[in-house]
Each structure stands twice: as C-alpha cells, then as structure tokens.
Image (cartoon, rainbow, N blue to C red; front, side):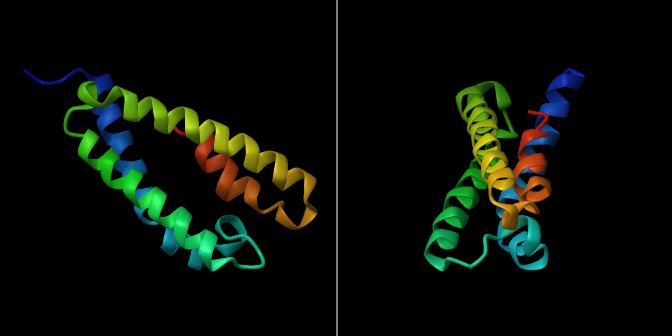
Length: 113
C-alpha cells in the first residue's frame, strides 16, 4: 500500500531541507549577500554550520518515517520561524543586512514542513 500523498510530500520536504541545511557552507560561499554576515565571523560561522549540518542529517534520517520524528519536524518548523523572524528584524533595522531578507529570512519562512 502506497503512503498517502501528504506523507510523500512531507518526506520530500524533509529531504529537500536536509540537503539545504547540509549545503549551507556552499550557499554561504556562492551567495554571500544572502547567506553570510559581514564582516565574516569564522567562529560564529563554524558554530552555525555545525548546528545546521547536524539538523540536516537528522532531517534526512526522519524522511524514512516522519511519523516517528514529529518532535524533530516541529522543532525544525518553529525554530526556523523564530530564526526567520529575528533575522527579518535585523535585516530591516541594519541597512547593511537587507540582502538577508532573501537568503536568511524568506528561505526559512517559506518552509513547507
């Protein structure tokens, strides 16, 4: 019996966001206006990469059986909304960070999971 379409959609979203979280170092280097704070702070950058890489791995693992990992999924949703809100406030109050509205804010606020 095939899983319901909403379950397939959730599995695809978990895979997509797991990959995006793992790809943050690449996004940071190739789209710095949206994904990197200036001036660069390597200590902060390494810390945030490690957190998102870990979350990415666990989202990919949760893709196999989303029903067993609902707390992780909801943590990802709500923490991303909270982070997006904080980043939006910083982006509009610091004129030098307006580019973050596309990378840091919109990409996280639009999470379909």
